[in-house]
Amino acid sequence: MRLIDEWLSVPYTAHRLLRSFVAHEIKSQVAGSIGGALWTIIRPLSTLILYAFIFSVILKLKIDFDETGTENFTVYLLTGLIPWLAFSDAVSKAPNLLIEKSNIIGKVHFPVAILPYAAAVTAFILSGITLILLLIALIIFEDISWSWIWLPAAYFSLFIFTTGLVAFLAAIGVFLRDTAQLVAILLPFAFYLTPVLYPISMVPETYRIFYQLNPLIPFIETFHSILLLGVTPMVYLMQSFALGLTTFFLGGYFFIRMRSAFNDLL
Image 1 (cartoon, helix red, strand yellow):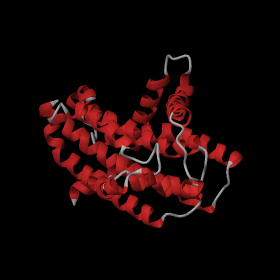
Image 2 (cartoon, rainbow, N blue to C red):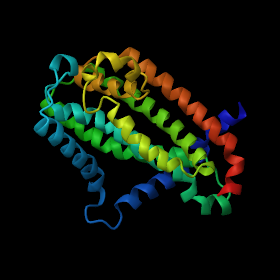
Image 3 (cartoon, helix red, strand yellow):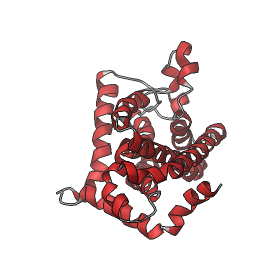
């Protein structure tokens, strides 16, 4: 219980340090570039344009309005892509998170548990900028629904899920240096096996029972339901929150438990 309490208290007791790490990470991504902060928008939009061109122009993928809430493939894609990019950006950096900060961890005494929080917060702030632009576009071109009030809950559930996973992978990365390569291989599999580029109905019935085991599905489908279908997906919301909370506590517990070995291995 003490370890869980320590994991939960870190963002509060070290909030200044958290803000400092997040600000430094955001500035480091845009400093010295001509585009500056615009790159935080250009990067996800370039990915969107590429996938939209391939799947809607070349492959001519059609989606059903009754199932997805829109006939515009680009809108459907962006609704799932934004939360995915927040998740994948944080997770992809997790295995090397402590290794890259080894000079600080080894020489200066500071709450190392703040690093997984900082990585997740940074990714979700940058993703949140694009999400705001999406909401503005939906207000202009689509219908607004009362279901949107559940969007903060959906974003928070994905955030705590990501934070817990980042903490776990960051700790594992200290002991197993191949973790970064494994994550780099698994993330594309997770992307294509998550309903970002296509609705679940396109998955053959034979494989759907296995497909549904993907823990990311409730998170992505929650965003689809809230923003496009205009419904409150209570089942998906509860699944997302349960998965997020479980991963958050287990990942944090594992990180704090393994912390004593970090200095010896870094």
